[in-house]
Image 1: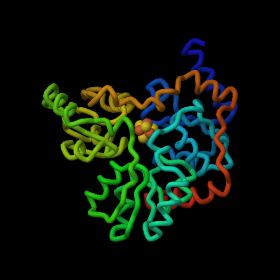
Image 2: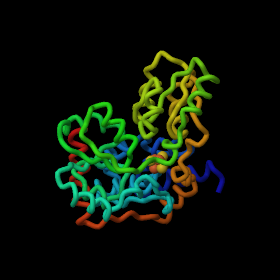
Image 3: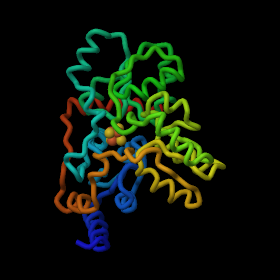
Image 4: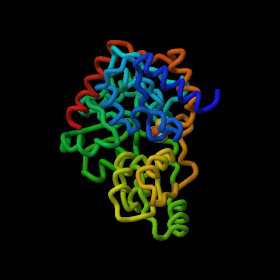
Length: 302
Ligand code: SF4
């Protein structure tokens, strides 16, 4: 089907089914442009919990759609591409976390939202990269475990001097960034500021001009007096940055900053999701209730 026609059909189906499309910043520009709401995990979770739509089409990866279902169990939540997962979320499992908790019952489990419902259900509180710093301050002085991202956990531990153990998980694209890439890009664009996501290693964060969540980076470039940036996060955000700041220049720190799973979703998948009601996300009710508690605590403290 031709693109304009497909967009018309998506809009028609949306009205017919009282559906809303949520797209993460890491989605392709085409998907961001047809979405009703575009944002980071925190913002999209808030929208999912507040919308009065009957159907939520989540253009993102599995844990995001699952989070929407946990927050809005009465709604139909659709993930357009069944296989779109997050390797980092799969790096912590229920069995391994239960094992850890048995050995360390005194540690509060702080869980990055990039995790499965089963892991959230075993955690005390969830955080996103947007609210992690604010929430973690409530637990300063207490023993914690941070799952699953070792880089974001280490960043928080160093910044706030926390008694925090970190799970050895990581985001495959942010974790691959190197100081060598930074040096090359700084040499090529000497006037540009380096901005990075704290899912990158601490050594990269330390040489950046600013580190923050995807939303934090977007807000930074909007407010900054600088006109040129080297961007150290998934390249999908550059579409949003260019729309928000058409006169500023953005250079991706590495061409490897493209999340394979995020880029699986195409317009046709969104159209088919709406047309054929696929793929429906379900979460077992006993798991959902426990995961909801951890997410709800996060929402209240955000
Ligand atoms: S960018 Fe990294 S953390 Fe985000 S979905 Fe992709 S692999 Fe997971």
